[in-house]
Amino acid sequence: MSVRDAVLTRGVPLPLPTRDTDAFYAAAREGVLVFQRCSACGRFRHYPRPLCPACLSREFAWMPSSGRGTVWTWTIVRGPTLPAFEAAVPYNVVDVLMDEGVHFVSQVLDCPPEEIRAGMPVRAVFVTASVDITLVKFRRAE
Amino acid sequence: MSGASIRDRAAIVGIGQTPFAKHLGRSEYDMALEAILAACADAGIAPRDIDGTVRYDIETTDEEQLLAALGNPLLRWFASSAWGGGGSASVLVLAAGAIAAGLATIVLVYRSRARGKHSAYGKGQHLGGRYWERLDTALPGLNGWHVPHGLVSAFQEMAMIAMRHRIEYGTTDDQYAEVAVAFREHARLNPNAVMRTPMTIADHHASRMISDPLRLLDCCIETDGAVALIVTSAERARDLRQRPAYILSGAMAGGGHHIRLSTFYERDRFDDGAPRVARQLWETAGVGPEDVDVAFFYDFFTPLVIMGLEDYGFAPRGEGGAFVEGGGIAWPDGRLPCNTNGGQLSEAFVHGFNNTVEAVRQVRGTSTAQVDGCELAFVAGGNTDPTGAVLLRR
Image (cartoon, rainbow over all chains, first blue to last red; front, side, top):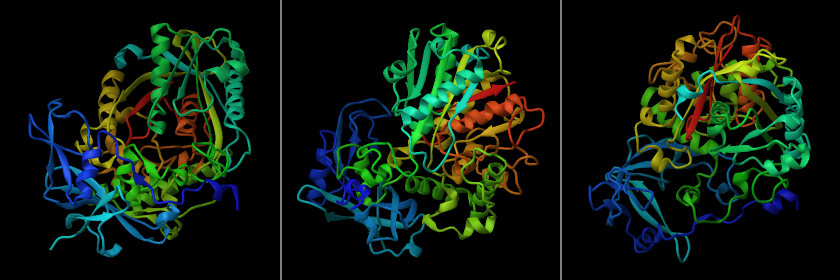
């Protein structure tokens, strides 16, 4: 084994929920995509943060998303990549502009690389990755 | 501190570097010290007279290690810039600010980087592999929003940003290739450059796609090497050994970061960091993009040079691609020669600081791709980070 083999990340990297993100992952485990919505000005935000960047209010609620959006930008990863993802190469990664106006980085499942395009309508689906973590992925919306 | 208050107050009077290579087999500490001694010798100042330092916050050679090796009894002011390559010009804004404020009189600015064959960054230092190959598998920070979906490294994040630029403006592979080929031609003239074999547009297109739309030859190289600069007051600069490169102006601005696409796209591109740096820079310098003789963009990836031309007003919004066509940024005949050292695509990747050294050479008149009568050089940090830029004048 080379020294490089000894330090290479082999496991699947997963998020570790924090006090700012616990509620997001708790909802995802139940199959619900939620975003923070400012209680003062009504603006949605993602990633989760304690303050509304539009009006500086600390009051917010976790609101269920429509789960719908369109592909804003994308790439096809052909490698190199982490060993955990090598079997999936080539795979897509997308930035979805959600109907709520926030951006969300994820993947479109069951969509060949040549069929990904900007503006493609997508809807959220849920993939259990561990006991604690359910990842939000997308499928093409008809 | 406003940009105006540092205008023409400081100058770069010494430059030094190590060789650049894919593998030097040396520590970042050792390379930093070689570059620092070379910069002091170039300036004609004694290392013990350095009383201020500026480094990148990710630099592994810190102030204590400098003191331990250089023995500077006078070190009294030190600072660092965050955001990696985004701060590659910001470090000079900090240095000029310290000079203008009288906090220091001779400021060392440096960057040492062993990231070639054996990365010296993060866990498992010197054991090989890229930083992103050694990520944790439990991600408490913002990496948790994209790494679990297979977006693990800078070139993949940049691919997403480059793709959006294509979606909006129709930027093409040929335009990317123009950037790579121009900088390779510059590197071929530069004995310090790591990549000196000829490259054609066809070579670029034939290189393998690694993350659409980026091919291998759209990416910077990974190298070992260090660079150091000595900055002092404009008054003192006139009495030193080299022709000074005066810091005409400099600016910094917070902004989105390429790693966090969910917030990167919260604001319009032209309300983001680099375009706001541009507005401050030109306003405080009293010159415009049309006055610049040579420009240095943070060329980590070819499309980011095209975006940089737009961010800083050298090209209208969406027309950076057209700007680089037909050798637009190639020395000697392009409308704006850029990265005349070969840049980070072909000379070396020292987090942008090798480009700054070349900008000083252009102002001195000693580049291997010298722009005739060069009076004004522009240097920008990474334009998809919180960033900065400076103008150097003769």
